Amino acid sequence: MQISKVKPKKAKQTMDEKLNSLRAGVLGSNDGILTVVGVLFSVAAATTNQFTIFIAGLSDLLACAFSMASGEYASVSTQKDTEKAVVERERQLLKTDYASELAAVKRHYMVLGVTEETSLEIAKDLLSKKPLETVVSVKYDMELGHYMNPWDAAFASLFSASAGGVFPLVAMTFAPTGFQWPATIIAVSVAVALTGYLSALLGKGNVKTAVIRNVIVGIITMFIHFYVGKLF
Image 1: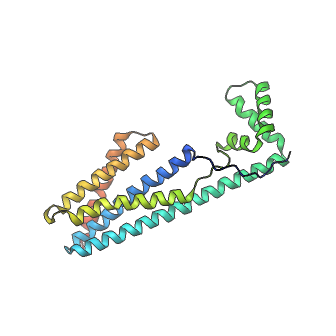
Image 2: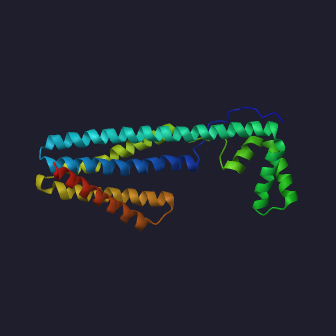
């Protein structure tokens, strides 16, 4: 059987692709919030110079954003390369071991409760029409031609980490002098509660648990970095 390398037309993003970018965004924002407030609290506990505090926070915000973006790009690029390698392997198997591919598709439908005879007919029909698309879907739950986009994840992480870090930076920099600490604590608590809420929605987890966990982690982060700054 001849398996052509016809490239599929560019289609809309699948739900997995969209969720991957959202995941990168949520993680990036949470990381941006906590790393920036950590630096702000450490520096602000060590000095009252507002310019020094601002520059330290801004520098960390930029470093965090680009670090998260580069990490997401490298990670998702590896995933994309793996997905492409899987597709090429299945392309070769359809040429060299068609029987095992047919058996895999047949087995898939039998697991779903279809009779052996009907499963075989379905497998033969699908492999005669869309062989590569079928085996990739059945064996790896992938849509042919849809790969995770490292650039989408990188930009989502870059933007969200920057946006997350703005919360504590603005609160510490622009709040009245006597209200800087409580304003930053409130800003961080609200921001991490929001990222906890969004992460729970994406992961279909318990919203209350995720929000409380994130707020506690945020408070602990601020507490630790404040006393690190006090040491100096």
